[in-house]
Image (tube, rainbow, N blue to C red; front, top):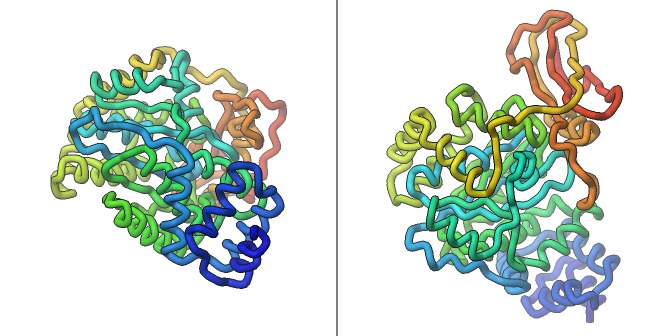
Length: 407
């Protein structure tokens, strides 16, 4: 039966929900072997999936575990997701910003596997910050301050977790239907009413082309409609890192700078766009009105206050947040204009400095990372500092010409 299903997809036939359930639930229950599921996932990557197959797979993922109960909150609950990028610390800013405008944000986030940490890793770089909250703690904190960011406490979409771990090591992460089912199953199991998804596109992202980003956007919205959830998407550039700081504690520090009004630029602009979409959905107001409220709370300190309230509630302390690492400055080797900063090269560098993990059990150095000292378009003179590397790795290797394009 399993071989028949694999063969059917390999020959580009549409599968029924029952057939998808047989192979995927069989994999969750260890009845389908890794090599069989690997072959099946590769067949999906090659031959794609129909919309009905994607809807069915999303449903199978959701029903493989629990669904979070947020019925105790009587307001519209809006969640935000990013497909992942280099220096993407938007959740650290957007979540408290939106919550400061009386739109509740209860977010379950994950750890990073790859070049840099995930949102939970970044928050854990704050001394004392507790990421594992019980359901009672989530409920109390949500009612008290309107914001919670926690690691997954319930058994949400265990099938997706197991399938994703296999996709990660079998070169099957780039399938648009599999990406869409993975994202939406977690969001729907998390029980948000409305969802904003930041689709990163470019060299430093999972999605490499605008065409694929648009297809993913349309598919996410279709799945949302299927489940009666309003979904909005934002497609954002990931050819270059987002912001100046890449690395866990470094990204927290940059998030604080944005919340304090000390930094503008691409990160600030994206934060405003994402938060405006969330507030528009949560308060049922037009986007321009929402944007005005968002900018006000970034400038008047209310978003910063909400972030500090979140940190305090989850037992963290940002008063003495310092980087404990050696610093290596990368200096320009010629004169010219800085035309590009390669996001993928920066990401790989951060991993080598200790900021990421290659295995889920690897330990992250929260202090490790890169601070970019120049912006694209800047005039560069030989000897100018282009970036500072923070690491406890001795004599880190760095390819300046591959990372910085100066001409």
